[in-house]
Length: 219
Image (cartoon, rainbow, N blue to C red; front, side):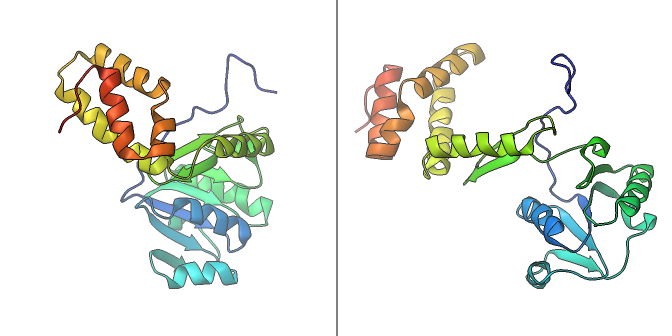
């Protein structure tokens, strides 16, 4: 078990736009990994002699370059991330070595101890994405915590995020210091602003926020 003072992973959000991500494997696991990557702007290369029906459908939709053979070290040149999802542990181990030689970060589906990064259990709604990590030791626990979070957050949280971003711009326009701005935004969030938005809509939430900020409602 990992020590409380030394954690295996540091949760990070990576900008993948324009970066090469290589996925090795043609089954269900590879499909799940690719679905996590879609929509983030990365260049996806899939290397596998055969692929599942579902992966074939994704490839047919475009945006995925399929190399129809077994992977080799040269496939990892220029890759930022490499995801190894074959059903051959020995092959995964050897490919992980080659991928790291190429300077890529590696995720092995069959061996959490040989991963440079892992995916958290994620809740994704609009522009909002929340991921729960368990240090790689208990993915089922992370998934349960994600489900608990999902049960407390409405489907409209993505719309609220857009609303709150506009509200933040208004706060910035008031020209407070960075510390005061942060305090005011936290006050708005803890005052029940999302509840008003969820129950009554953006107009009522904006009026509520203006009252909290001590500003009159604009006509």
